[in-house]
Each structure stands twice: as structure tokens, then as C-alpha cells.
Length: 105
Image (spheres, rainbow, N blue to C red):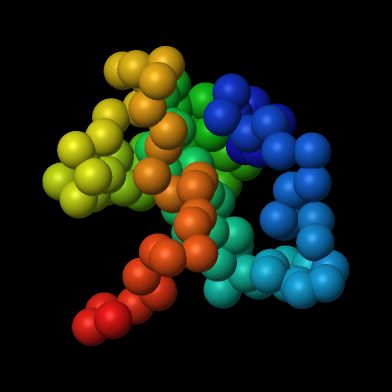
């Protein structure tokens, strides 16, 4: 799905990182779940709903359901919808030193 996605353009992909190893290399349902969850958050705010990831998925995972849920959360929490403005930066791809790190901070 990564090769089909127009939102995947990182030179160094988290899925290929070994230090730290965010996603294990063994083939197992929990690794697939982790990979798809991290990827959905990584693309949150950039997904354009083309559904290419779902179309090319070899095991027919309905990835659009996860992506649409994140799209709804982006709109609700940040009033942000992907592709609507060239000037607005997607919320989950930026980080500032003074950003709050957790609930109650």
C-alpha cells in the first residue's frame, strides 16, 4: 500500500527503521496492526481519500475505515481537512518544543 499512496513520500520510512525498531519485521497480525496504525497516524491530515492503499492491499484490509476515522478526528480536533489549503500545515506533521505532551500538562 505504501508504494500506491500519493501521501507516502518520506525518504526514510519509519517502517524501514531499525533503530528504534517501531515495527517488527516478523510476519504476524500484531505487527500488521501496528504498521497500519502508525501509518494511518503518520498520514493523518494528508490522506486524500483516494483509497489506493485499500485497492492494492493483498489481504483486503478495509484501510479506508481507519483513514476516514482519522479524517473525522482531524476535522473535530483541529478543524483541518486535507487538501483544502496550500497555506495550512497538517496538524500531526509538525512539532514545537512548547507543544503539550500529554493530558493534564
